[in-house]
Length: 566
Image (cartoon, rainbow, N blue to C red; front, side, top):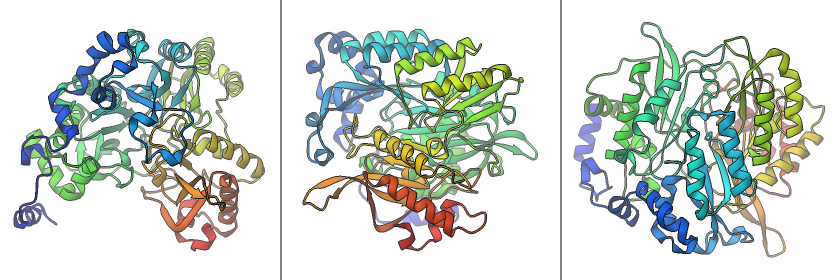
């Protein structure tokens, strides 16, 4: 449908009730969430945390601050221990929550120094009971944080250039950046300056601290397309324009959760100097036109679904940029893996090493030991990744093999099994108030069992296993070869036990997949947590027996009959 046809269609519709689009309906708040954001925005709560709540304790915290504004500073109450998953949907938030917080450390582009790593490690061991998780958005999350300790934690983080500003909330979240930005020998362009410009100009800006919902950004200059751009609100992927040189291909409107939608290309070429302006334009469209009436409709993906890419591009160019963007080509299919696990050459002759723990679970003690290892080998830089992994930079060739041995002793594998490499898991019921089942331990146990049971069997490629504790898909279940959505299942004895609904054959553009696609579900296909390793082993063996030459697991799982997938 052309833009003119879209406009005529919209004009012919009967007048509908307000969706809370500021540029269409005005900015009168249509729900309680929108009301408190306008009355007193999330950024304002920092002063109260520092001057009141940290001195008077948890019980002094205002309810709206606790369950709303605290998120703007990376703070969520964590789940009270001992509450089973069956009560997640029946208890009120104050009944589920403990008097401790999850604290999300924001790491734009995933870029860290060993000094910064030591500070995070120290906070973990001193204030967080030695907890730390690598997220699939390049952040590090700590648990067991008391509000009394938050000002001191902020002081330590900000002293080394880190922070928690807008790590959560209805704001521009952390910017995903290529973990090998500026160092990979095969990089097309370094996105670090563009990311830094956006952060410098707009992080903590009140103009963008009241968006309809979260807003996620991904920017990469690496041909592996290593930032999962297809499931972000805005993605910029390096491309070589035949006339204009190296720049970016613009994608908008991706997101998963309970209503997954893959981003779409706008078909434009973004010059490196224009990245921040284009980001500002897309973010402003979301702020001004995003649907605010209902929280479950307040994501950019739903605005794009209504408008389509033609209208979105038109509004971006005419209302926000003031000029047209040149047409641009799509980036070619990746030819290398985007998780960067293993040993790879840098452009300066040194090497980077990608390593993986089990499902992102680390600790302050481990992070401190990792800083020691890096510095002992002359490295002072590392990166987090969108795959719950770490990339260690600037390793001399002579140190590569000795370092790999030391890292393995820490539980960080540079040459992991394919299942350890390709399994991720969300926080799960251990700490998350939305979760129904355990994820971290369940996934780890399954990986260890699969490593033993499938030892000696050569898999043709990685088979990704993503484990999520609830329907919200923080672990990207719809874009995994095997995606698992946590739920409770009948135990055959009149009760319930932890289990999962199974999604099969999803994935993003990668070495083994030309384009992104969502997984399929099969009616009634569910597996208990206790039987997870049995099910995955059975499925993998069927795939290996039935596959056509060169056929991937995703392709097979979409063509296989339902009985083969049970």
